[in-house]
Length: 443
Length: 151
Image (tube, rainbow over all chains, first blue to last red; front, side, top):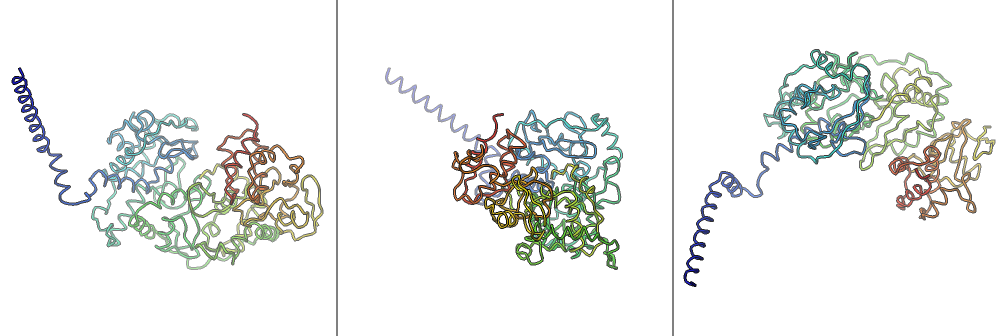
């Protein structure tokens, strides 16, 4: 009995050994094992897999595209949507693009995602509003769209449903967008020179940089979405891609007149502005541009370089004759503005104030807003300031909307213009300021 | 000469119109509650209520106040008879060195007059312009929560 049981045990043992060997043989022979074992032998630490390289690429494109800027509510979870976008046609709330299956895009395939990026059509077939800049994303390569998809799908899933849109009649009827698309959606992938790989090595030719810059600016970065004048149907006017526009209460300046500034923009100044939100010969990013530069802070040097190179190639020549002041400034207004400036602004903005002598902050004489044809951004800056944001660094300016009356803000802006800029004086009164106060200007 | 109404009392002042309101309060009127902190509108130690808004008195020319009423911490209550908000600051021991406190109280007061039962998030957002270098922000927030009316 005992002998027999030993025999049984031996047989069982042999059987399990045989099974183990068989399993191990199959496993070692499996292609995945062979592949990983091979990789481990050739280099340590192992190089990034294709998947992680795609994720990194997707993350870089997502910061250039500012996805999180629009798709994140004020102090909400990243990419979970819910941020109100004020358009001339009503308020549109950005949607949840986290991988949550119920409320986000977790159930979307790559094809679904690509269809939304190229054609503005959601997974369930409804048309997205062009506040989502698919007329730009349509120009991106399949590989880039796939990389953004992979990156978004790697984010934390958040359950969040955006509030309902408030649009003027009849725009709640989405099929109308299909008609809009017939006129204003121009599909077609733009050439991208990144594949040549010379960009990342820092030896890119100017030509390659121009191609790459144009691809980024027309495609993922969608600069013209804010900087192009719009027609009555909310589409960018063709042929004037960077002529400037008013967006969320702020003037998005023309990007073709960068050489007309008191100090003409240079490549280095553009790089500094896009990467840090501050150009020491022009000023700090404010309003809706501020979050854009905060996002671009994480873009690669090569991509910022390429965008700056392309932007500079778009410039019209500055007028040769310097503009003389034509309109006479209102003396009483200037006098009152000067008094307000002395107490409210001079501690930072006077010629020799500490603020203007360190930290790369330019004199108001160089400020883009103060030298603009339209006083809008100067008034906006006085009203709203540049708010400090929790957890971020960068320029700060207190707003004076609650401190000064409309007439006082008009006086202050008129004084700043007359005293710091060589451009034509602004004709301003309290009604101009009142108009801006009534606009929504959430950055 | 200009007239400045502070805590309900009109005062005749003969000073440079561009003098910051803070200096007029402290030097001309002897009201030393509001403090000079940074002079740049970055710390909030000088906050007083003008009209119904909290403002940095270090940045507001006295002539620009116009007919708006100015209220300072001295108008809110006294050591013997503190206001509800001041009592909450005392109860929560919100002051350490105390330099920022007059500004903190006046900014919070402006909020509570407009929104009697603010949410925690509303309080945080509203109080953001004011800094406490000792770091008693959590006690300051607790005091304001104590002083709000139950929702």
